[in-house]
Image (cartoon, rainbow, N blue to C red; front, side):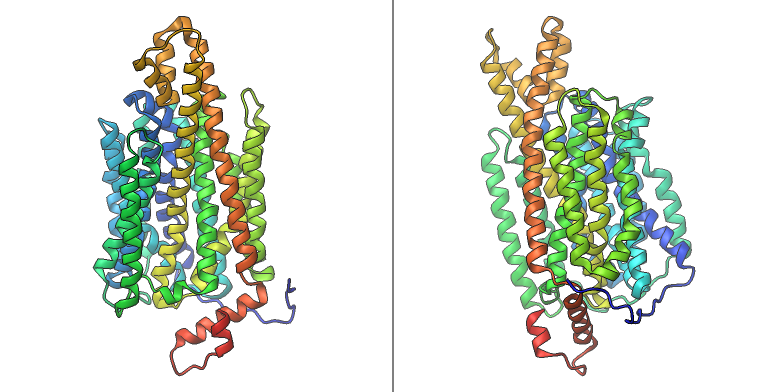
Amino acid sequence: MSQPDAKEPSPESTQPQQAGVVLLALILIAAVANLNLAVANVALPDIGKAFDAGQTELNLVAVGYSLGLAASVLYLGALGDHHGRKTMLLLGTGLAIPAALLAGLAPSIEVLFLARLVGGLAAGMAFPTTLALITAPWSGPGRTRAIALWSALGGGIAALGPLISGALLTQFEWGSVFYVTLPLAAVALYLAVRYVPAHVNESPDPVDNLSGLLSVLMIAALVLAINLAPVPDAGVVAIGLGLVALAAIVAFARRQRRVATPLYDLDVAGRRVFWVAACAGIIVFGSLMAAMFVGQQFLQNVLDYSTLDAGLAILPAAALMVVVAPRSARLVETRGARFTLLLGYAFCLLGFLTMLLLWKEGIPYWKVGLGYAFVGVGVGFAGTPASHSLTGSVPVRRAGMASATADLQRDLGGAIMQSILGALLTAGYAAAASAAVAAAPQQVNTDIEGELTKSFSSAADLAEQHPAYSSAIVEAARSSFLQGDAWAFSAGIVAILLGAALVYFFFPDRQRERELLAGYAAEDAGPTTPVSPAAAARG
């Protein structure tokens, strides 16, 4: 691997006026989206009891926000590029407030899912523009540092969501967790109105609305298909949604090749630095969201943690993400994105191995904290290069595309990884619970069997109704949950290994990365700037 050249001059940095306040406003707006991603996880057991919800319904509540954000982010990011990023920023932050209120007051699990979906759509308006508004006015090492802060503080705040939610749930009902972002959204809205610049390097190109609708359809259908796959009697629906997703993906790709101003420039997306970083980020950020999603239920269901203790348990991940990210930015500059990404992947792998091998009944906290610490360090190292490589490999006029892809890394990654791990958790739990029922010394009627296999929350409610069998029911439910989470963590390990292999074999080393980025910049400057045919062929 190439070593840094001590004599190589550093590129100049540019930044907007009042850069610190502008960056604070953008980080706070991103924090509203990131907190909303995480606050529901710690409340899932309480939500399950309140609505007698099955594991699939809980999965949909957890993934609903990511679904709304991931499905809309490409389209809304493009609309922001054309009609005004600041306008879209303000609309999304404003809509987040009623969406949070609706979630907190939801009278049914269906309304709660709808509120989470609307909240995700609000984030789809605001979140893509935060990174676009860093990419456009910042440049050079200053941009790398700004992205590192945006990535670290965003991820750290998301990791703090369970802690804040856990503290609220010790005193209030489950709905309170959705009010956490209200004061933050109000402050962020004020700062955005006052300080965030408008109309910076925006695109005059028209938005292809048909492509936008296809992008929404393909992502929404894919995520829902994954979630419904393990549900009994829903196989036909899941297959149908999968086929819809496939057809929408094909139609979307063909449309981008045919229109004069594509919503998603496939030529830019085909650049090696771009597409490998995009795929790598999906797995990294998805691993963080999946670890919190499964981990919070494990802590409360198996280890019997209180909601506050479960929230506190994740602090190592939040703290280490914030501590490691600035070092990640320096590593990107000195050793390159490939080295930094692989280092992050190594720590994420250690985290999931810890969860798979050490997270059992009755374990001490240090084993829990160790798993979260490894994941926090991994995301801290890998998050910055995953986002930085996207923004560095696109023209500034396509900043919204890079920002939307960076958001997709988090949100589609979270939606897909939570959906896959949630589906395996559901299937593993149901299989183990069904086996336990079949092996029971006494006949279990169909209604009781349905409650036992539906979710841990349903089994816990059943245990309260039958005190004589309470211990046996809870112990069987815990054993079943452990089988389900073992399936989920194993899938996470496979995903991380595949992502690491992708980065190792396809992402360029530091010197080659710089050559490619210089070639991209020359190509984007216009036809008058010559670009090496060999460089174009290799990129």
